[in-house]
Length: 114
Length: 112
Image (cartoon, rainbow over all chains, first blue to last red; front, side, top):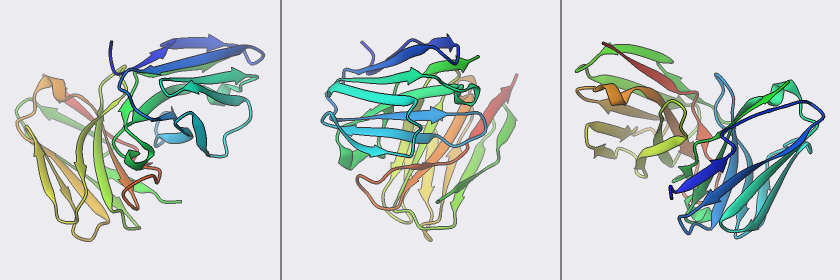
């Protein structure tokens, strides 16, 4: 198993759909993150979880809803998205919150909103 | 908010050439990191720098933490085809649980 696994790799959805992105890490890390990567923009931190507790929410619209049932799994629930939400969504983990610089990223989920 | 200016935005080089790229900030960072993203993959950490003036190597890659704490450089020697990808710098104001600021990336293309 690779370190951080994301599914699905590609997702196309309409604005009225509800879908979820899944992330699983096999590294025994305690912190997990969702980042958004859009063309020509820096990576944007969306959510941070430490030991299943959300510690940061960077003014992300409520149409994005994270869930962390345990320290190995992280979900991003999507509903009533907008076309401008189309992007690559990257999950990452780190040993602990004290090591937020040394991130291990998944391969990303490429989201297209029609 | 804090911003990192990364240059150049893109580079087209021939195999075997050396590569230099840099990252500058208007504010001080106490940690600098360099990541590489291959096409269709997530970023991978290449080098982490924790001390001003520090010079660290990882194989053919060498990175430096600028003495002013407002910049960092990454050099790649004798480039090979697998060096293709996007290189991102990232900085943290303090070591620890403070979120990273990422640069916009340098896209490296190797001309056959």
